[in-house]
Amino acid sequence: MWRSFLAIRLQSSVYTERVVQVDSVPTLHLRLAVSSLLALFAGNASATSTTIWERVADKCVSAFLSDAVPGAQVSVVVDRQLVFQKGYGVTSTSLGRPTDANTLFRAGSTQKMMTAAALLTQKDEGRLQLDDSLARWVPELRLAGAWRTNQITLHHLLDHSSGLPNSDSTENCVTDDNTLSARAAALSGTKLFSRPGAIWNYSNDGYSLAGLVAERAAHMPYTSLIRDRVWHRAGMMQTMLRVEDAMAYGNVSHGHVGNASGQIVSLPPDAYQCGWSFPAGDAFTTAGDMARWSIMLMSDGGNTLSPSSAQAILSPSLDTYLPSGDKYGFGTFITDIGGTQFVHHGGRTPGWAASLLLIPADGFSVSTLTNGEGGAGEISQCLIKETLNVSWPDSGSSETPPASWRKYAGIYSVTYDSGEQSVGFVYLDGQRLRLTTYDPSRRQWLKLEAKQVHLDSFFIDLDGDGELSADHELITFIQKRATEGPGMWLRSLAFVGNRTY
Image (cartoon, rainbow, N blue to C red):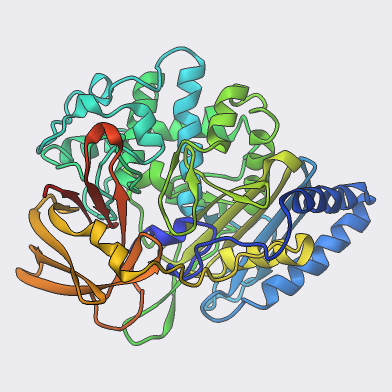
């Protein structure tokens, strides 16, 4: 899929490594260890510090460069200072031009926190409030189904709790100042997955609408707002949205993807552009600019955001109920590891991958960009492991007795991302949990075994390959809040079920 839901986390592979662990390290000891190590790096002379990070980065990047990931870029911030940035490999397998620290890569969904910032600038200036109804700003959006636009707040858009389906559609991809308005009009008739505010469920369209609200509040196009009021104020002078600007810049990487024959092919930077998804993550940037972004956030918003708005991006807003245990802020995942708060987000567009990780309490960040559809998260992990001895290992399976799965059983009203509705039956069959549902896209009934991945999360093998290889193959059962009465939500990327019986 275009911007993979699972790739938006620090990791860029599918959901087998979600739970973050640091083996046998007491909370206080890890907190002190991380702080002490970063203080040691910060205390070195600049040249020495650069040498340390270059040695580690060289080792980590070299392990992941390949024909599928021919180029990368890394930056490191220590004590809110950019101490290292470097390009590796080549911009394209077909051209062979070396990548340097100024080469542009795609940022993917790491840009979502920047769109959140664009909207928050308008809150800081008193033009809107986060509890404003979406209907106030986008009155032309008329939803179908049980829930209405006036039930969605701007807060819901930023933390992915609006109930809007996720979309990677390449329709309505014109790129002009009316693009976001046109997308909102195209979304009329959409059915929400769930009641706004009920559960976290990732939505690119939610961020498209957040960008639209920001531009309407600011009375300027989103493209101008994020450039002039966000990126440039944060010192990100090499970050841009439009393909034509990246091509004019010249030093831009090509994406690399596998074709139907399994061969890796090079995509030119202008292979695609989709205006409606600009706020969801289409920018071109450098690891150095990503570092400057993290410095701004960790410096109380600098001259870009108010301290409260910067903190809102770095702080948890709600639980994702993913096996990782992550919380979600405004365009950010937040993971607590042994008392240290890691704020992170990954990104993927066709041919590129990105990863940004921060430890706000220590003024530390690492940014990784690649011109392949992987590697960015893994390189970031390697840097953290080599320097701070903190790992993101495979989660394994945290199992519960099959008898306890009876709590998931029932009849669910299922809404697909296409807006079509169906019914799903969840029941215990001996020692197995089964899901039977009618799939409107296939026009057939599916009888699937749900295999436990971690606690309330299960794997359904939709493509028959025996592996959790697609985002929508992960389903999670979420207990409804007491105010909603007894019952369950059944969530996946492609559909959400509301238990009715």
